[in-house]
Length: 197
Image (cartoon, rainbow, N blue to C red; front, side):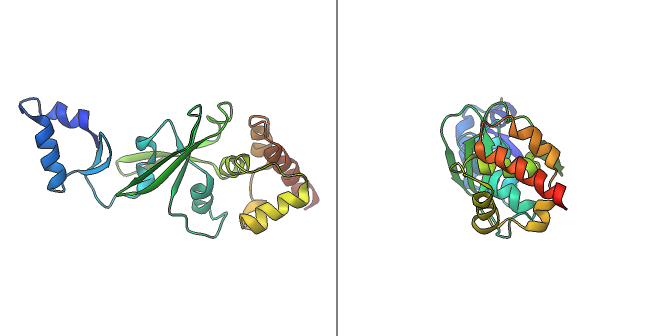
């Protein structure tokens, strides 16, 4: 369970020195520090369940989400998250793993986010379409379909079968929100593939 230092101190109203008690709980392993002011009671909690509490608002996206959906073959160890209007990348190295956060455009941010619940935790993750759009938004502009294909299937190693299962309508709608050549190119490319099938 995630606990903030504020929540912990609220429970200890009768204690004179709340900070000492908090430090003792950490030392005894009853609380595991995530970042300043944020703790977890279970050392085995998977990192992705904590990502939204570490820095936000944010949701899981980019490579981590692409791997979750089987769009890329590699196992991704860093939990990659999208934010907006933060203006700089953030990285946190914790006992629960490494977490990175980077901006996408504010207009695109609220679209295609899925809320998932696992036991007592909830987290937000991009849909497969959104995760790919977020990733392409971060890359240098691509000139044409050939460049896009090479980027998708050679550099990112996107699974072609999973790629063809993506919803072209969702990507078309998202393409208007990024002001990104790459995302517009992706929308046109996917639509063309679906049409030619």
